[in-house]
Length: 232
Image 1 (cartoon, rainbow, N blue to C red):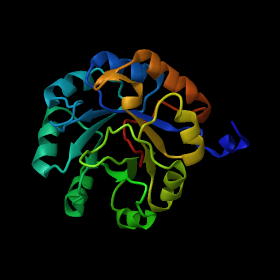
Image 2: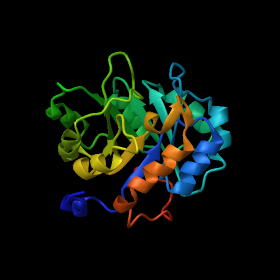
Image 3: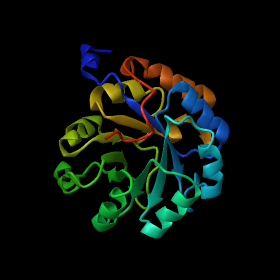
């Protein structure tokens, strides 16, 4: 690693997404995950029912955030999940309705997920400035809403911080996570398919390897904060 590592936030946050099994969530929390993501989009291979997510969520430490992942939901859909268990924040994929986002933000933080193609002009992110709590930058694959396993340009992610807090996603895995963190210097990383055996089933050795690779970026990590993600 180069000396640039010293410039990276030393309390990098980590979200493990696409959780469907309690054992995976529990290990992620033991290793130091700040947030666990539950996908409430039925077409996703990692989809989970709100009732099943609630069972897992009740086993999580109070310091770990529960993030609900939705694709173009209505307020009623989000409220239905919130009636099953308390979400810490919502992550929205697809076309973003800023009136809906404003309504949701009166209740809890909103993460806007954006699929970044090689041709994506960074100025397009200007519309999100001050209108959501974080930008999750993911790889692009036509017809999908995340979980593509495709990487984005990490320098692009670093520059995108001019428009808001950045959560880096897109094809992150133990072998690439340290380089991604060093180059992009994000607020947080979001890892899903890169630590799986198959969709929704995390590989425990890969999870352990991931957090080992990130230890130098989390020297000042403090698990005693509340479960807000992203932090205010």
